[in-house]
Amino acid sequence: MTGNSIVDPFAHLHDEDYAAPYSRNRARAADMVAMAGRQRIVLDGPWRFTLDLFDEGLRQKWFADDLTDIAEWQKPRDYDFDPQITVPVPSCWTCLQPEWRHFEGAAWYTRLFEWESHPECERLILRVGAANYEARIFLNGIFLASHLGGSTPFFVELTDSLLAGENRLQIQVDNRRRPDRVPMHHFDWFNDGGLYREVELVPLPRVFIRDFGAYLVPDGTLSHIAVDLTLSDQIDGEAEFSIPDLVPTTRIPIVSGKGKLVLEARPNLWSPLSPKLYDVQIRFGQDQLRDRVGFREVRRDGEKLFLNGEPLWLRGVCVHEDDIFIGRASTETDVRRRFQHARELGCNVMRLAHYPHHERVALIADEEGMMLWEEIPVYWAIDFANPATYADAENQLLEMIGRDRNRASVILWGVGNENADTVERYTFMRGLVEAARACDPTRLIAAACLINRVAFCIEDRLADHLDVVGLNEYFGWYEPDFNGLERLIANSNPDRPVVISEVGADALAGHRGSARELFTEDCQADIFRQQIEIISVVPWIQGFFPWLLYDFRSPRRQTRFQRGMNRKGLIADDKATKKLAFDVISRFYARRS
Ligand code: GCB
Image (cartoon, rainbow, N blue to C red):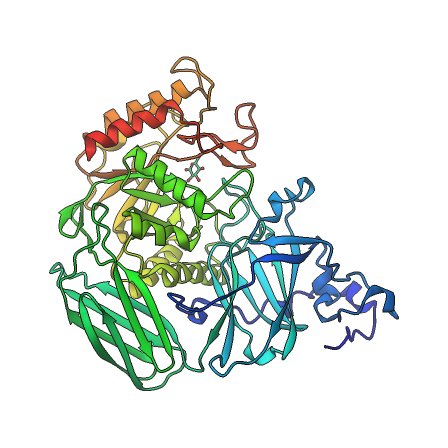
């Protein structure tokens, strides 16, 4: 590794285009690698860490500096890879030090690792589980790739820049909110920063299976399984596929790196009551994958929903990936607790608001029999006219789908939440709907649509392109008069399933009073009671998603009852104290199941 070769130490002071060279080589959905059953080298643990508010790392090319000890320097530098300041990966820097809590900017993570070549590993790919929001990858002083999007995994090939022996991996992560981002400036959750999901190295043979899917063909017969796969290279050949309890070893012809087969099979179907998973195996050349896959069919017919041909009513709850101590770096314990509480409520589905949550959520949901609505953060105002913003949103959508396409529990892809209905937004959202449909025929597409608050009706052109129309309505809270909800229902005659995708009220746990006193548990419970009375008799409403399971951090919320928290949880931020409304919902769901 050579030292920083900057000739003129002052030139960078005048260069405001410094970031352009490092916003190239975007890692995209097409670069993803199917991970089921693969060997991984975990890079979790302490990484050297530096906050970089003024982007000096890019301006001065810190990544190109060598590791010479500061005592040996001939010239001064502004960065020394100090091994004494480390942070754990995964984690959110916003949760590590009080003075980092509201930091929005760039930070540098450095990790050394040893590498020796092995005959069975011809390629080495870096997988980053999530980095909020922009990430730039450098190996041994060389810029390799960047990635946009704060909640989806991305993959960067390291093979050609690897050294035998010690390697220096650096990731610059930048969580600044910007006008072209998805989400943009303004959203109702906390803007955590950092490498907050696992970072891994994936050793691979020269040709490997990049993507594969196994699913029940959604033709209403429940009698065919389709398998498709894409290889890393556009070559011809043959793959082998089997489901030991269901499908004997079968050959799949591969042409130009792609193969697809439809087989007759009648699996025991996956459902919340019987979450049957099959061991699925696929092999091509030196590469093989193993996954646990459920087979089910979700369909809409008119304004009704069906799972495996049976009517389906969605007893839902929304949840953020949030914790007052660890932010969005949720652990398995966290995730299992969410499922436990949702089950106590009587839910059969959870809406994972408002961005893709950790991949283990869908894996556990598959096992536990909980259906999921997963979504991308096309939330409130977005720069809908900007083609680069569209490319970013579509890529987040495709990365989410690519990651979770084999999870039977995921029944809905959400493409947006409460975006004003302009021409640009209409085009943008239609593009997303088409992109999701084109790559996944096995799920329904949803979005939280807009209500006309003067005429009291659903008024959103996007609704015509969705399978499931979400209505976020806060009658009783933001709009105190329930008369509006009754008028909305009377004025609507939807031709497709509608769900109440959000409904609720803030309540500080333990704060009691009359049903009219805002921020009391009594008021929150009463609003849910009245909501349920009105919506439960509407034939076209196919589901209900209280907003939400737990209180969560939101800098927008600053009253004495909120203090930086959105208090609409049915459970407080300690994730243990249930508010009165919890019981109201669980009684309702007990009647509905
Ligand atoms: C909404 C948003 C959600 C907010 C919620 C609220 O409509 O979709 O993200 O947190 O309202 O609490 O106001």
